[in-house]
Amino acid sequence: MLVIVLENAPPRLRGRLAIWLLEVRAGVYVGNYSRRLREHIWTQVEEGIEDGNAVIAWRSNTNEAGFDFLTLGENRRMPVEMDGIRLVSFLPLPIPDEQ
Image (cartoon, rainbow, N blue to C red; front, side):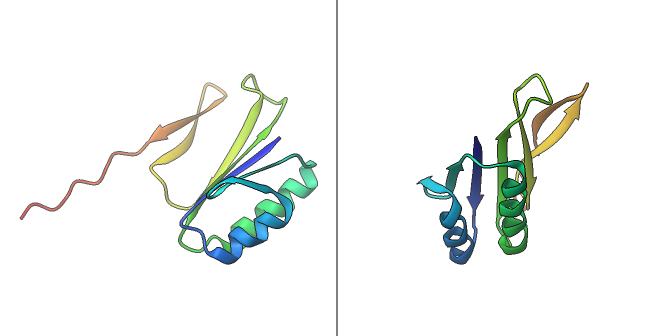
């Protein structure tokens, strides 16, 4: 199983992903592909994301969670590793300028 979520992505990247994956919600793509094709698809995301951000998650037997993930671009949610487990940390919200 493979899931890719895009935010603020250019339309041409969204169209490109629709070639391989099913868009079940706006910016949410799912499919079931080999490691080789998953890496090819992610390369397409890396090359086309521009100012947007993306996350890819896939089934994996390499950890207790049963899945692994990568992120790309700026986002409040950032992956961190703690005691060999990949978790998600939230960056603080920016403080608005006082006027």
